[in-house]
Image 1 (tube, one colour):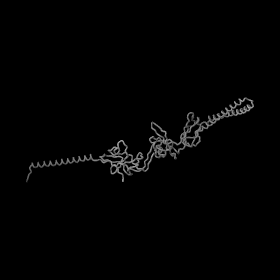
Image 2 (cartoon, helix red, strand yellow; image 1 turned 30 degrees about the vertical axis):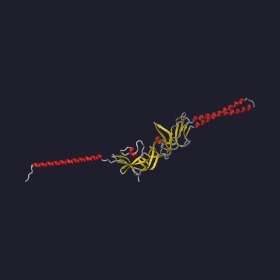
Image 3 (cartoon, helix red, strand yellow; image 1 turned 180 degrees about the vertical axis):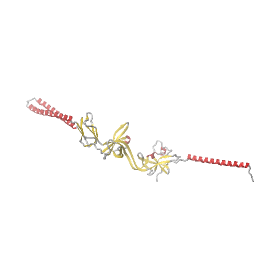
Image 4 (spheres, helix red, strand yellow; image 1 turned 90 degrees about the horizontal axis):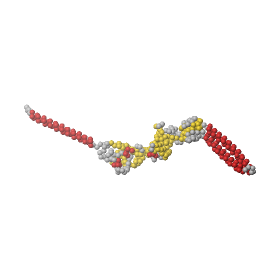
Length: 397
């Protein structure tokens, strides 16, 4: 039987240990190489760019101007008093339907009645004096022809009669003025309408010495109203008489009222250096839902296109990442460049030159350009580019 010496066993154990160590080193190196490669690839791989797109579509574009205004009657009559005095009776109140000539209030007529009687009596007296002097004139003229009296006495009587005639004419005017003032004690409505404001009560004294007091406000017809809007000067250029308008009021927040621009008033209104103009919108108020004084939030349609090719406004502002606006649009710095949009075709942005038209808050009309309904225009992007450049779209076959 063979026996292995201790020295031989020791040599075999040492060789086995060195082989295992070598394999471990190789495995470690390979692992590090794999980790390094994966790390380098992750750090240097091209990141995929994600595009946000919206469709090109056909539809309407509406340009509007907004403003706030107040609902008012088309015609409001201020009924005042020509004479002063104490209000004796009130015959009209708020919301009273009145007819032209209807008495709405009565001022105490007694002082004016007394004045009329005074002037009437004075007229009667002076008329009697005139009649007497005319009789005397006829007698004096006859006597003067007979040389019974001096001719000068007859001539003086002529002047007396003329003076009496002037006095009677003045008395006639005083009587007529007193009669008019007596008539003015009746406060009457000049038109058919409805009383919207009453500013006087029974027993109140009105004085018309310096300024005519306002007693009633009468709206002629509440079935036809108007909205007086405070429109910005920037919107004045686009608004025309006949433009359509819509508005809402707080009393009916879910209801949209329709009207038409009837006036562009040229008088400016300046408040704290802000200039506005009054744009008047006519409204049919047949159901009497609107009441004078309501605040209206109006939208005036200044221009409109129907069934046109339109793109979102963001598409005209989009520029591919890594390019300046001038480079992306192919222009020179400081010079205007044509409008362009970028369409996603075959996964890449393709630049399309367009001619924009009417624009509103959301869309812009495309008058010409290689765009069709259904194309996807780019509005934004996410990710980082690695040298990819947008292509130029070729005309469609």
